[in-house]
Image 1 (cartoon, rainbow, N blue to C red):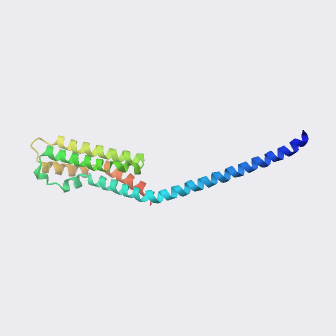
Image 2: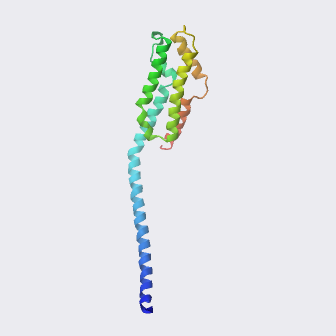
Image 3: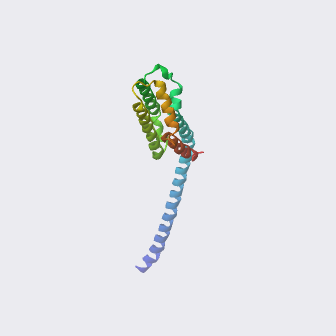
Length: 170
């Protein structure tokens, strides 16, 4: 019995040592393959993510009052019509870029959605403050003045967060 143990114990130790070495070797090899796959995927994803950041930055710029009003002849509208047109443009701009959320972090997307909500509320609140006989030109001036004197807006905050996150890719 002791003779059998003299042969079995060293054999078991060698077997265990071999198994540990092989396990670590396979594990390292698998990690190397996963890293190479990530690296290859990153080469593909990085340009797509950068385009998504660009599109979202452009969207945040386009939904600021000065850009919204630039393309419109505000004298052709009544205040409610202009308000609806601005709200529609903001919603369309955000809806058009909704798919870009998969390329940004949850925090940045939340800031972008906050910017959307605040811009919609801002456009509505400014229209409510005007007397009924006001012209759409008065409304446009009020929007621009109030927006530019508000300090840092939600759009600007979201844009800063977006730029900071994009800088991590570059």
